[in-house]
Image (cartoon, rainbow, N blue to C red; front, top):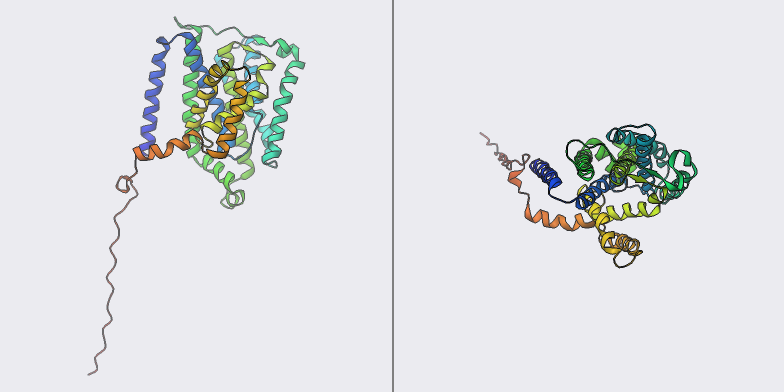
Length: 339
């Protein structure tokens, strides 16, 4: 409990520091930090499915695209305010996740990975086909939101993304410790045992898939606020591979691993493209291979022993610790005396 409260307090302090950076960092730096925040939201969604649920998805870039196009279409066609489109995109992608989550009850591992992979390959082609709605190959250009006060567009988007990212991080962290999160982990580890304990395996898998898709769609909607443009070519298979590489590097089944993976996905291409245009794809492939073989717990797994040494748990500090009970004296039988 103490560690949980300390982590929440540190998170609140970090949020305040990030807000103060709004007026002390140039717009390009703010746009990169915004990209870290929205990528973290997408990785938190994918980690719910892969890390906590034990499922496999190679097509979450498709849900990212659905959220992005939802915001772009609502802003340009319906003239809806930018911020209002965020919950709409999350709910719509959640509903799509329910549709694809129902088959996940029967599909496992490689089969589910193929289905999601097919979705990631097919969706960009569908977006090009319905050009009357999606803009086809040219995509959709979205005007930047109206700005309150003296904020620039990058400052406004930065504030929105870090607040949404903080709320999603806190929500997923609480969800992982709740009954639903424990049901997800139990379903991942042993379905038969989870069912015997009263967990509805089918509904847990569907909800898990839908939540994962909804958060990824929310990240896609935030990306439109940042870039102001969507195109089918932006949501190819490489996006899904990047998301998988992010959670593998950060740590499967961990909340903070999503933040580490988001930093990696945002800043790695900036330096890798200086070597070659194909370098980011090569680096992602090597990251997945090396970490799955030698570091399956990711960067968070490497940091856990360090954290435990810095904050060792003592039995006296736990509220459930009790002093050892004294052994009851044994009665010694007395011999009967005959008169």
